[in-house]
Length: 371
Ligand SMILES: [Zn+2]
Image (cartoon, rainbow, N blue to C red; front, side, top):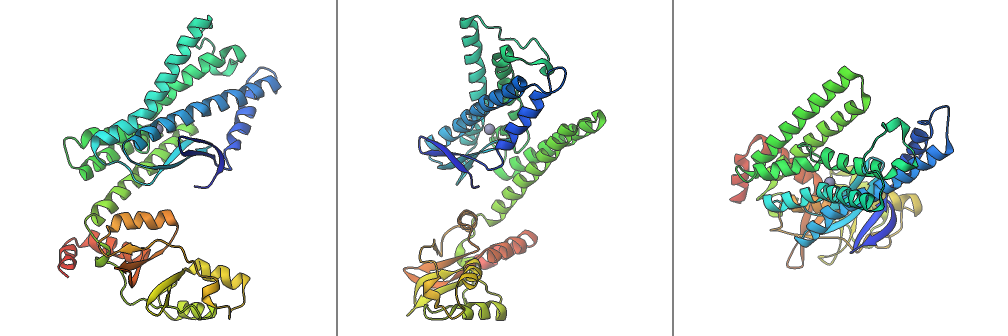
């Protein structure tokens, strides 16, 4: 996910999504109108300040997840701040229950630690640490108790045992110690969706739309996690050699871009390897073709517009990992190589086809493995 880079902590970039400032506008309006009798500038300023402070706590929460992940050998790409919270983007997720448990619990624990720290600071400075007013009458003196309150709230909310919350991962990790990972995921998904239903119905009963929105968010997050686990379950153990297309159409560096357009229309292929005397020298994806035709003349040689740097995959690379690699690189196709030799293409469609065929007929897998 793209964003504006704010700072780097121990090699992890912290970025702000372009929509993030919306939450500050929301806070200014929300807190500005809380005080009695119209809009108050001081209230709006209070809203912005406490929201910014709260997001520092969110960053610490995501950093806690990230630090544990990095320590266990799982690289974290970046942390993106969205209006609804933070998101640590990882290349791979830990699967061993103990690792997943530690990584998931680190986030909520960091909020508990912040709350405890703030309580100690408050007591040392002689500031009241208990939130004595209701949320509609907050003033500057309530900033510290408000932050303590929201950090405890963050910890509790994130520990709700439903995907995509941390609690969902904690639950799966605990379940995975007594059953298979796939089964643990399925149970955790069901628990999460059950809770989402309850939350949604309570929200409906109460006329509370925020709860209904959270319920929808939790329900679809759980469904997505379930799908991911299912894809992984089906694709696990499969290799590139069982899925890639051997008969790929190939371009030469001297071909005009228009040839790529012609081949796209005449065949099922839209992304092309560029080969020179049997060696692959470039890759021309469908997006590259469209972009090139917009900017250049159709007779421009392919060598001038092809990409020369691109990942490749080997015959024995795992299909699930390669599928993820494609998603990360934003490519629909990867050249398949064996000992420097170009063999064919693996497309996302190939992977999707394998997935669909095998989910309806698992015995196909053993037959293809024999090949
Ligand atoms: Zn978290």
